[in-house]
Length: 138
Image (cartoon, rainbow, N blue to C red; front, side, top):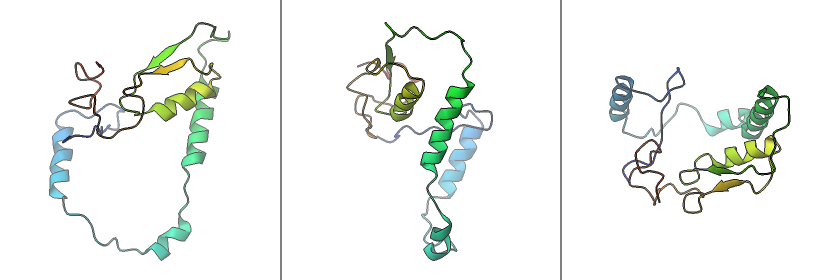
């Protein structure tokens, strides 16, 4: 596919729209040659680098749970099922983790098998954009 589904969001937290989209596209076209040097060496950078993905994710999910003030009463989960419409796994791990962080029942977060697992080719859609009509039809 010519488009593998990435999205760009602006400082207003919304997906970009004209004329910002055209400006970004113009800048991309002006920078098509891969960099071969970066002005620094691995020896300069690597000792200072650490992967903070886990720390940031843990903090994010804990904060989400602590900031949720929808109701003081417990959510009745006996018959609660949610179908997550992942588009080939996009966001699935985060949604699953949030589900667990809120203590919702295991086995109640459902996902369409044909689109549940990550696949950058998006084989079930002609255009990988969930806002496009028919993108979630199988």
